[in-house]
Amino acid sequence: MKLSLLSGQAGCRAQASHVFPTKLGSGPRLQWGLTRLAGTERSSRDREGLQGQGRGTARAVPTLSSAPSSAEMLRGKRVIVTGASSGIGEQMAYHLARMEAHLLLTARTEAKLQKVVERCLELGAASARYISGSMDSPSLPEQVLREAENTWGGLDMLILNHIGQSGFTFFSGDVGHVRKLMETNFVSYVALATAALPMLKESEGSIVVVSSIAGKVAGPFTAPYSATKFALDGFFSSLRQELIIEKVNVSITLCILGYINTESAVRAVSHVIPDTPAPKEECALEIIRAGFLRHRELHYPARTVSTMLLIHSISPELLNSIIRSSYRLENVQRT
Ligand SMILES: NC(=O)C1=CN([C@@H]2O[C@H](COP(=O)(O)OP(=O)(O)OC[C@H]3O[C@@H](n4cnc5c(N)ncnc54)[C@H](OP(=O)(O)O)[C@@H]3O)[C@@H](O)[C@H]2O)C=CC1
Ligand SMILES: C[C@H](CCC(=O)NCC(=O)O)[C@H]1CC[C@H]2[C@@H]3C(=O)C[C@@H]4C[C@H](O)CC[C@]4(C)[C@H]3CC[C@]12C
Image (cartoon, rainbow, N blue to C red; front, top):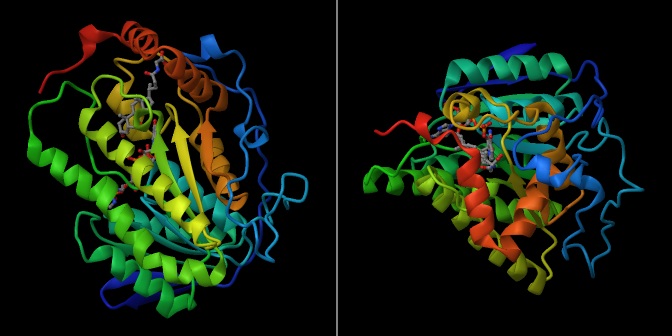
């Protein structure tokens, strides 16, 4: 392994040494809350349709039957993962490393990124490097994409996953927090995608946007966060249409996630939401798979998220009251 310093940001590169094949859906699926209404979970990869991109060009879009195994999905591909120092982003980095992808990881905490990069290299990444910084800084998105261009000369997949900190509590009236969260969770996604588009057009690549059921259905205690996730849907669903009209073969996958067992989510909500969260490792692999298959949306855990969306489309009031009554409201902290 060779360690190098890149103009103030530490970077790390190495040759791939070995591959650990990964497997989807082994072990029993955990169930939670609304899952009881939904029944047994089943992976959404069997259920989601492919989006329009890819039609009218010579490039083959992978289908479920022709899709390579997880180990081969992104071999040699150049992938950026934001928010990769912990949680789902960290797990995505490990899956991609096992697939022998080239990785550029971002987050604020350099020490954590260093460790994730080292682990990625051990797992077999074709190369792995990072850039640290906060995504509320307007210059970081372009800096990240410049690094990809200078290092790889192109890009195949952009996975937008980071989020700024926000609590799970009554809205405090702090408009400054909303503004900052919009900058981190929404505007930076737009800036990263905009800077990446020329390279993604060239490679006919993919944009993966990690969102939440809170970006489709607004429950209580997530007002600023929910707003940023709704904004992502509005922007990227509109952009997807424009790319199709322009016959630009860049796919956009919006990932609608339910409660996942990352440290930060469990810390934020376990005293209020008694349900068992879904596993972050499987969630990470489902996101990569959905991006690779160029799906327009991923619902994970599939049954829970799809059932919530179905009930919401029939009776939003009913869903809202189910959500409210499933929370331990007495444990919600007021700031
Ligand atoms: N876990 C869950 O239950 C759910 C998660 N999701 C979505 O999944 C994605 C990942 O969530 P999860 O893994 O739980 O989150 P984590 O809190 O575990 O990870 C967040 C990542 O973002 C980075 N980050 C935080 N603030 C900034 C910032 N200002 N600038 C740049 N990077 C930042 C963090 O690193 P650092 O602190 O070092 O900067 C970290 O790498 C998010 O988009 C989230 O909305 C959706 C639904 C449910
Ligand atoms: C638990 C939510 C799902 C819907 C629900 O309320 N179900 C009721 C029931 O189960 O009976 C979770 C879906 C989305 C989650 C939130 C999220 O998107 C990530 C945030 C990230 C942050 O780190 C703190 C936690 C989150 C606010 C998280 C909380 C749980 C959800 C609202």
